[in-house]
Amino acid sequence: MALIDQHEATVLPPRRYRPRPPLFAYLASSPTLLMVVLVVGLPLVYSIWLVLHRANPITRKTTFAGLSNFRNIFKDPAFWEAFGRTLYFTGFALIGTTVIGMAIALVLNKAFFGRGFMRSVMLVPWAMAPVSVAVLWSFIYAGDVGTLNAALNDLGLGAWTQAWLGDGNRALNLVALTHVWNQAPLTALLLLAGLQSMPASLHKAAMLDGAGPVGRFFRITLPWLRPSLLFVCIIATINALMAFDIIWIMTRGGPGQATTVFAWLGYVYSFQFLRFGEGAAMLYVLTALSFACAIVFVLLLGPSRWRRRAQADTANAGAPNVAEAAVKARPVTLEPPKYKAPLLPRRARRLLAKALFRLAVLMIFLWSAVPVLMLLNMSLTPATDLIRTPASIIPSALTLDNFREVLFPDGGTTSTQSKRVPISLMNSFIVGTFTVLIAIALTPFAGYVFARWPRARSFQIGLWGILFTRMTPALTLVLPFFVIYRGLGIIDTRTGLVIAHLSILLPLIAWMMKSTFESVPQSLDRAAIVDGCSRFQMMIRVMIPVIRPGLVAAAIFGFLVSWNEFLFAMILTSTPDAQTIPVVLSGYLQQARFHEYGPMFAASVLSILPPVIIAFVFQRYLVQGALSGAVKG
Image 1 (cartoon, helix red, strand yellow):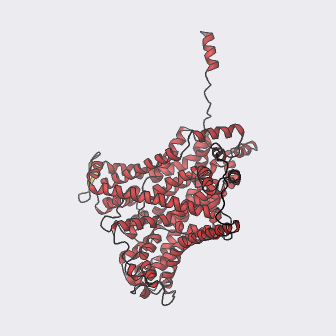
Image 2 (image 1 turned 180 degrees about the vertical axis):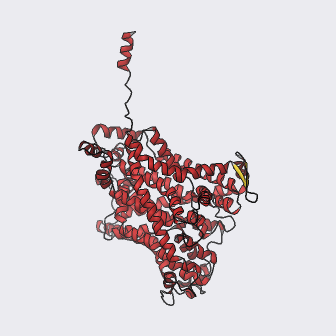
Image 3 (image 1 turned 60 degrees about the vertical axis):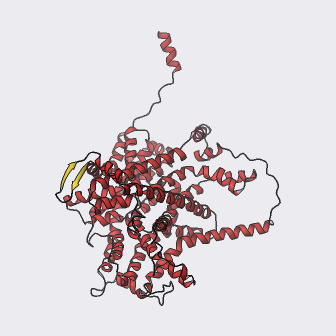
């Protein structure tokens, strides 16, 4: 028996030893995890309580309902109609953002004069707040005085004018297209970062083997971009499923129910019908749908056998890049090229290629910049020109009166909404700055821990919890926030908005920091510790300077998210003391006073000015941050 036991001991493979994370790992990650539990976990627990109860807003009594709220919404025909529209809207947005973002990334990956400027222009639609985007495009699509109809009139095509949002099917498509215009630059940025990291030698070798541009794209570029495409698909799907701001401004679910998707229907149930339990149940269905889509994308685009073999080969051979080995694991097998006489001479082909490339650059500029230039033109147009019929995009004169009214309001003639613009801009800046500072102070430590000890069970649970909060609709949290804030006395305060925005930024930036640290070799950690640094000193002196591009990118992303946030500010604030600029912009449309169109567009320009400046000044950091892993997510 002793011999048998000894023989089995020599045959069976030894268990792989996994060192336990040090105390530093738990101390470093606990502030972020604790903050996530406080600002996200507690509201989620309350929303779960809402799902299981039925509240009477008149008597203010609640009764236990179990799963009846889910049964009620499943029996409602409006639920299944919204379900179909949500799938259509999401599919339209996913395909549109991926195709357009891929095309933009491929063009802007080429070296040409003015590439940095074009990259900044490309980012402008994404940097704009969805509320500003919706204000702009709702006026473009408007009936008698809309910009699109005005352009048709100026071109002599007045017979083509129509109320573009008046038809249900057309309205849903136009709202989805507006969402694509807003989100496609993010996809382009992520894919551009992947293209920047691709070795040129791969394409050169394939060209020597006779591969053409189309063959190289499908056999080299797409496999290389597979990890980026996975994240792009997940983010695009989640953003489309939870689209709310654009629908609120442009259609409010109409005409009829034509643009009523899950996010809007959940809002209607919760805040118009006051059926909080059923509204929360609908939003949890939306969360489950987000998870299901993420799992499908992971199965389709995630690690597969050939990629795991490539990683193993890379580890054994010491290859410099796992993704490069993954592409090499599926070599381009081409037949010997067959000679075909070209249709055009070589010089003509080169000139045609240059002309088509310049045309592509021009199309990107027109797609990204023309709507923004229209907004600037409308902000400089007298109010009477904005409502004249027949409409025209050419103003009778240019004026700064609209900007004077919102920046230097007169107590007697200036409208109430215009008086709120300066303080709302300041509120947005203060809330965004403090939210980002708190998030950046906490999340790098948690991101480092998640990257260095990914197999520790406690950190895996924390990471999946953060991912769950990222996929939870903000509508699910806003009602618990309102109830809790009212009890704490912080309703309608900037402090309350900072806490609410942290529920969005902490999970987002923590995940970005994890991806950033995954691109940093662990040899730097060991070298710093060997030199006598403690782990905390190693983080401050070594790791933080190394990940500076990713840190700057995360701060920019976080500030833009906070600056552009609308739902929390709309529900949790009611006075100018705490209202942010997206809420003030939406207030212009609620008043529906034509003479305020000029100040509304001027306020819209002021609201997009900080994001546009960020896009132009920090474009390089955004690309570097994405390249280093900050937005791999």
